[in-house]
Image (cartoon, rainbow, N blue to C red; front, side, top):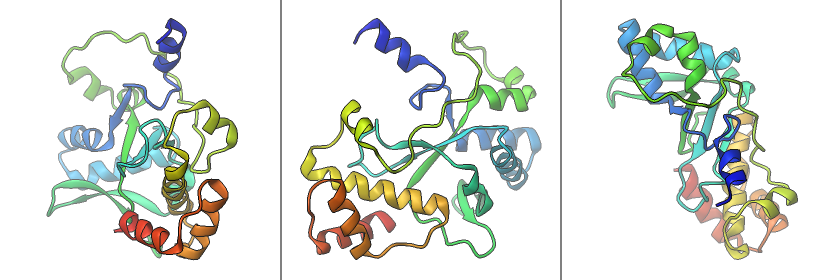
Length: 214
């Protein structure tokens, strides 16, 4: 890997930056500060919803390549969804607000650690000493959303053409969920991914959707 490539990947605007901290870890730290997991989830949601704290999500499905499974969570997402604490599993979860459709996708959420530490400086001060970072503390640049254009596909490595429709399918389902759009039919998704690459059968698309939505 060239020095130029290493430098580019190290910028804070990159979605693979080590400055992205799991939202669950941020919630755990906030719970220790506030003394209540529900209050911590409430404050964490408020921070990402009003643009103070950038938030990124990754699709967990194994067939989506690591360099294609990340995107900045749009602010509109927080109009319908929020972080919540499940007392049974004792884990941070995403819940629907009001009449929003239940969020059913396997997605991991992350927050921008430098901003998190600025919002709650007490947590940064109490954290264990760590090596100084040369990364700039600025807002990460939003990455392309679920729809992948031709230029991006040429630039970034990904699945072989015969399997690329699976990535297109997963990305479109994530995009629709984030935008609060109705769940599409298998026929609609079949037509979409055929435009992307490959020509999967309707039954194959139905099985893949069932797996992703389960």
